[in-house]
Length: 484
Ligand code: NAD
Image 1 (cartoon, helix red, strand yellow):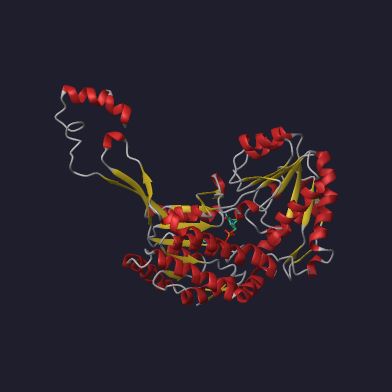
Image 2: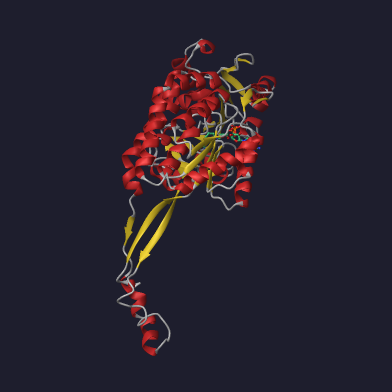
């Protein structure tokens, strides 16, 4: 079935087929096929081979959906997934191994362990901005942990969605992995089914719908959401280098990155000095004919373009109220090109400072001092990330202590998500739950405690079982407290 929206046409799975697809992979789970480590390895290896064998097709789909360059697709989508699979394959045996726990002396003789077991059937709902990586990265964790999976790619990246729907069922065990394509209607139908974990990446409005639907079945959820990730810069760092890193993180994927720097906070002298460096950095990374530079992406669709356009139209009309364009500003609704744009002197109450920008507009907001910057960030929703450019240890310590965000980076935006040992996720409005590396295995596992105590010798009757004698009473009050 094909659906036409004002944004774009996308393929959709027949609504009537959805319950059957879900019960199919539930049956696959019940058969136990996902339990052996060998099956998990085989699926992960096949997925790895698919990503590499069909990389040109994936690059072409990402180019069609987002104008992504092949190199950027390798860096942030295809290669990212391959590295994640390699990490999972290298560590799977140790992740699956039961962890021994020593029972207290009072319970001896006994043994105890924690046994990770798969949850069952996982639903993955993905967004459009990294449409391959964000659809498949949770699948890697779900399979590694021995679950079966239903994946719902984003309808707003229709080429990538169609490719995933075409290739995944032919590559992976169909008894364990199903793809449902479509938008609101199909996702609503999916959410009416019972799952054992729902992993949602996207915006907070839909995150609430997902959490609501999950509550009906008491299904645990991971919500990977967004927010306005602030940048703070002070005069202790080399501004040219800081500007280059901010520009890279902001304009990657044309600003459509959940952990992109959203806005910059600094004292007025620092901001004045930073502006020419931001201009230089944009030029250095993307040249002077950015609209013709294949390294720079496009806005995903007309609706998102218009949302961004309204911020710039306001700034052009009334710079004092909405900020002044000091770099970029060129845009073309036909080709969905939107230049890397910097807005200076943006009031903290301006519309561009209310919602996550999720596009290539970087507002610079003047603050009186560090205290004011910390107050501004703390008074708002907790962001997915905060980025601090300062070599002053006391300043860094204050950001660590006095603000809360999904992650906090010093000196570089975005890259925390490439460290497998760091949990990736939000807090408060920016989401709940985290994944990557071993955590991707843990979130799709139940950590089952297993205690084993022989019936003979019977150490319990003489200590904790009724009838309670004076001797047992004194044992419970003294000795047991010390050895439990
Ligand atoms: P989107 O519009 O593609 O939506 C995400 C998914 O939700 C899609 O699969 C879509 O079909 C589904 N959906 C949409 N409306 C629905 C409804 N009413 N009921 C059920 N399902 C529905 O993507 P988006 O939400 O625009 O993505 C952008 C947001 O995602 C930004 O806020 C961004 O910060 C956030 N994001 C977060 C992360 C992260 O890892 N934390 C990563 C990428 C994006």
